[in-house]
Amino acid sequence: MLSRVYAIALNTFREAVRDRVLYGVLAFATAVLLFSLALAELSLNQEQRIVRNIGMASISLFTVLVGVFLGSSLLYKEIERKTLYVILPKPIHRAEFLVGKFFGIGLTGAVFVMTMGFVQFWVMALQAGLGFWIMSLVPGALALALALGLWRVRDRTAVLIPWSFLAIVAGLFLLWKANIAVFPMAAMLSLSIAELVVLSSVALLFSSFSTPFLTGVLTFGVWVAGRSAHEMATMKSKVLAPAIRSVMHVLAEVVPNFSLYVPGYRALSLQLHDQGGAVQYLGMTLGYTVFYSAILLLFAALLFRKRDFL
Image (cartoon, rainbow, N blue to C red; front, side, top):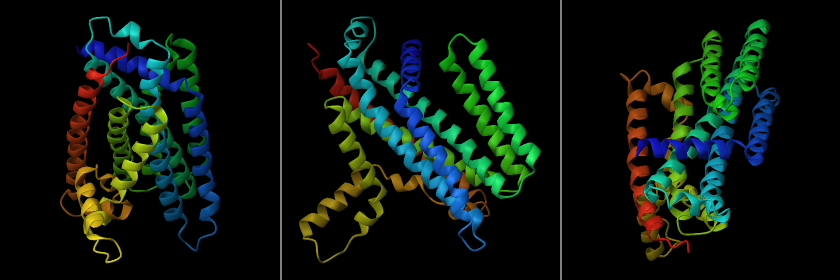
């Protein structure tokens, strides 16, 4: 079972990283992160905070877009190209196929987030005034490692996985050299990946029975509702009818609480002084991610199992 899920996940990753849309989003996100340096110069002694907040907010937003795009399109492509008709007759369960797709999307999102994380950390170190030589040497070494990997390795897409991990380690090293707190930044990136994981499971749930456009709209709607879960749960406005308020309170309890994944740098930094409060928060949120994703994948597998492809 694990070997089949692994094979599907790897093939899903290969298919996803070959999509030009993903590279377009990556290029645009990189441009936004670099542009934050110019915006920081307009602030009054708040350059580091501006670069950090704009950068991490951009990574979170672009990660959501990637999760919605991949989750709503990859499964449908298998059906549209009729490759699914070749895979399902083989000794593989539909649930295994769906789980493989889920892990492939999650792996793609993790590579995307870690790549963007390095760019963000490099920008933060540059703004903090880290030395020219180390700021040039680290990205140069990463570019050389990527070029050698693409040249020497047969499966070029597989190179991106260890390279992105190497890139994020290099980015954390730059933060450390620039005397910037490492743990809160690493935690925020981890939460962005966790948010994408939950969002992917939501997208696969809708994708198991609907079209890509409808899946994208519904998934994005769930994300908006999840980011507003606290406001909906505590809403006491007299403008809205009691029935509408009741529906919103129910939605707040049902939809994933995506606001958990954006606690903010200040909150994570303050919890560091509270006997591992940030570590506890990160662990509980990741546990919530695993639980919620498993429930959504279970429902998605049940729906996908009953779908007729004839």
